[in-house]
Length: 442
Image 1 (cartoon, rainbow, N blue to C red):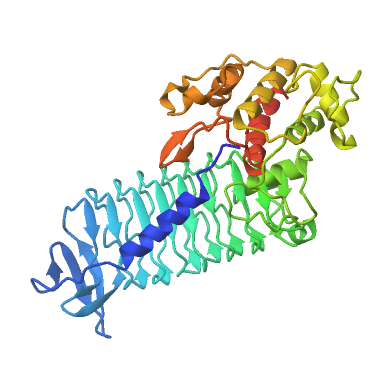
Image 2 (image 1 turned 120 degrees about the vertical axis):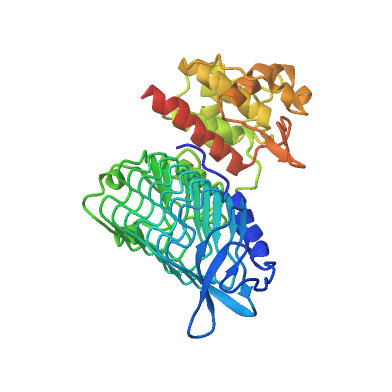
């Protein structure tokens, strides 16, 4: 699985969109039937439908009122082939957007459909070849057939609460699509909804899902499906028999932990380590994602990954008091994967720092015979000088391999080498490690 975009970034986009929608200015009428490129028709109920746009603005601000009358609809093909438009602000007065309304808007880069919109027409954003992100805030219950068909640059799509159906071929041939954020109201994914969207590596199914149609994810590069429920719940989801990608993809359940929200950035990783047995919960109902990872825990994870081999001998460490990690530490010590903090102390309960984590994974990779020659220039990170000499090569390798990347501090990426690694971070790094090295080894 490729690391998908952070859920928090999508939430931020939704919140920003909501603020924009609340600040749309009211415009007044100039010439009869037109205002600065907007062509409109008055409906019988006194509201306005935008029927055409003849302007050439890069940012199009659709009016919420014209001549004191509310604009409630965007008609069929109203902005079709508007080639200059890069962004559009759809006001919260709009209730309906017609068929092919934004079809072939080749330079449109992002779109937010407000919650006021109750109806979307077929092919509404089809063939918008440079569209990168789409947020549907949840006023519509159904994403119509072919709504975003052949939007080849679309990378992220998020559905707000209220969307229940993803229509037939809605995202067909969205070849760059990587991140799909389903709301917990989506019930049906219809035939070929994401067909030939080849960049989708993981699917995060909502608990509400009831049916997945024919070839819904056909010709995607699925490597994992995450589901926030039990095996019994999953068995009730109807899946069309022509969904070979679904049937051949590992499914990870993560219903066990109450402190792992289904839409959190670390949920897929927690599902992965839990299902593979690499990490377990701190109790039957908690994973404690924000808690620190100690040295004994990580060594035990790698020991499990290796198949829990019996160690050949003992260790010189006198502070190994718990049976659950003794064999793991002995195995790791005799294979030069770990060292003690002194000749006689291992410090099993000591917090695992990010640079220690990198070092242990680096040594484990050498033990496995994996290539560890990748090296990144860490000088761009403000705190690169805080990496201790023993961990320098390991941190450079881990960064180059995409295992440990920068964490934002005042919006600036930092390595934070001496910070404790949380259980959520370790789960994510382990997932990345397994995907990159163990999958290739197989």
